[in-house]
Image (tube, rainbow, N blue to C red; front, side):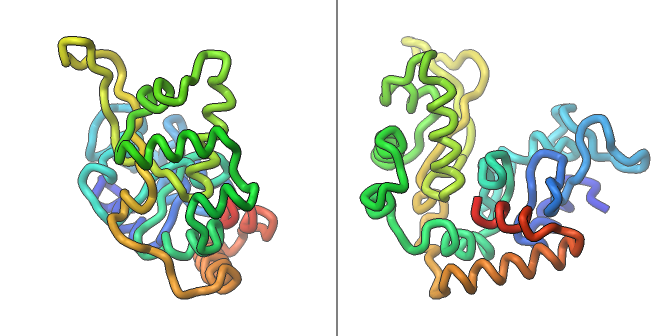
Length: 227
């Protein structure tokens, strides 16, 4: 049973990937329960702010303290974790060896996706509010911007890499923290491309899912792997 952050990381590294929001979505989650459905004996409780026992805190903690776990909106348009060991397989399936320029030239990305990707790539690490400012995103563009940012994460071009507060003209921090993004290559600081076909990578992930959850449906598995 997972009792704390350390246990969570250990289980995640064993599994290779996990849904991130307290719902396994028919696939797998290290923490498969939400804030209102924790087992009576479990010390894990959502949204308490305790960094040891609150899974909501862990999503940013892994990004701050570890170099072998990525977190972002990568499964079903919502959050999930992928370990360094398994990331190359998801890359092989979703990007099929392409860099972003090739992806765009193939017509697989919109101009807004290109604008956002290029802004983050040039900036190294960029907070959500900075991306909006540089790309000229207004309130009327909010929903399109959110979908676009999810697409870039789903296709493993951008990933979350921390949080940052806004600063006023005096350099003082204020307000809620804003999610920071970077390219996948900058996040891992390494080339994670694998010498494996997308078909073979798909099968390896498929087999691991069925090991974690033998009841997983084929349609759900396919959507999970392909993003």
